[in-house]
Picture 1: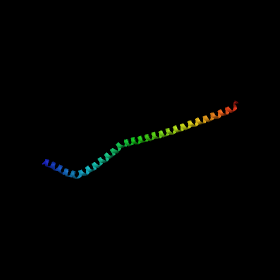
Picture 2: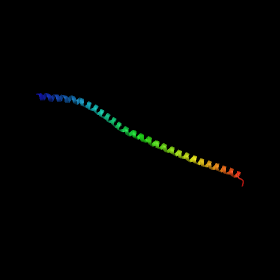
Picture 3: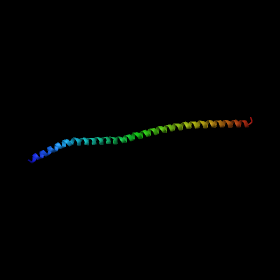
Picture 4: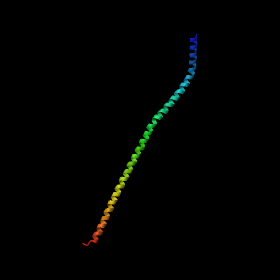
Length: 103
């Protein structure tokens, strides 16, 4: 008799669970999916951060190269200008000396 009561108890519990279980499973499944999405986001964030940092470094390297090119151009311009000025001044000085020295 006790086995029969026990079996009936489990049968009743099973009936109750069969109604409650799908709802419980559905909510648990939704929770697991939501947690999985959050985990995927968290796992992707470091890679996004690394990619962003790499892009910043690449842009900084490009900017540094442009600044270097500008500096080289400025250096060439100043060098040429100084050479031309010194040549012109030497020529002026040479011409002035030649006029003052009697031949």
